[in-house]
Amino acid sequence: MRRTDISRGQYKMVIYLLKLLPVLAAVSCFLNTVFSFWGIDISEISYISGLSLLPLFFFWFSSYVFRLCEYYRLPIYYVFINNTICWIDYFYGIPIDDFSMFFVHMLVALVCILIFLFLKIKKI
Image (cartoon, rainbow, N blue to C red):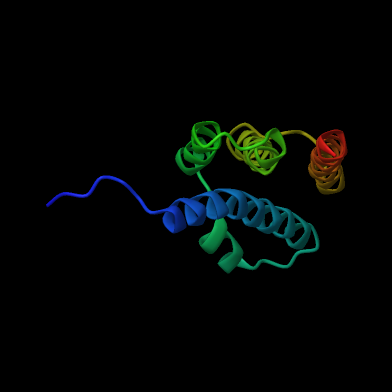
């Protein structure tokens, strides 16, 4: 017998993971940026939580399928923007010094945090 439906507990677990995993990815991306600026290379952070475009696309698409609020997509956008800046710098080279690059990453984080807070307050 083939079972195609999922239980309520499994559905709640998927929703919980779709909310939690992008936040963990964003936090680890932020920590990796901060540690890299200070010259501390913790490659385990990149190995465990580094994301390429396909998992980010899956999280983004799943957030629409399961009708999650917009502020649950902000960590996905943050990781995407941060990775895009890193990829452009790696492949083409952005002609700025390390502090300016760190400032750009922190500015992106600040903008995402402010938008998150605005959407959270707007919902309340």
